[in-house]
Picture (cartoon, rainbow, N blue to C red):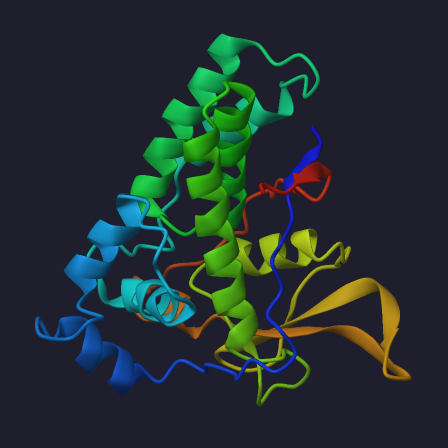
Length: 244
């Protein structure tokens, strides 16, 4: 399958927006706040194009306090979606397969509304079906989520990790950046280092990988629970498309 949408990177001057839990909790629980979670999520699900990067910051990290946030629960709908995606001919996709992707993707997003790869697949399916407005909406959501993660830290050290709600979100981000990665290594109770298969130079220095904070995943970890990483499906071979 070809790559579909390109990541809209943060401008170099954009200030980092590291998540501060007290701030996120206070603002998303306050019904008088512009970041009241119920209102933000309603706008997100309705495809509100006026959502700002700050809105996405509170949307994404505020989800960790919602009842639906269950990162350690397996999702058979995701397996079904990835199997469907792997069977698609990107040049001549069958309508029934695209519709099945949308159905399965909607079920997955009910549990993980910010999955970059699922949002990307939804955008792809709607575009192939000729529904440009919905394709644009899902692409905007994906880019909003990825910008939020990028703004949370540069990922270059354990002290400045990129913060994610799900393990797969970190890998999806690296896929979009076109950075092949190896198995993650545990660095501390909340941080893991994801090494790159091929280091690359940035301002004369080798960047060998990125640090990610997965701490939120374990907030409500069941006693005795052992997490086994599910297989991932990379979408870095989807063809980018820009809407004008």
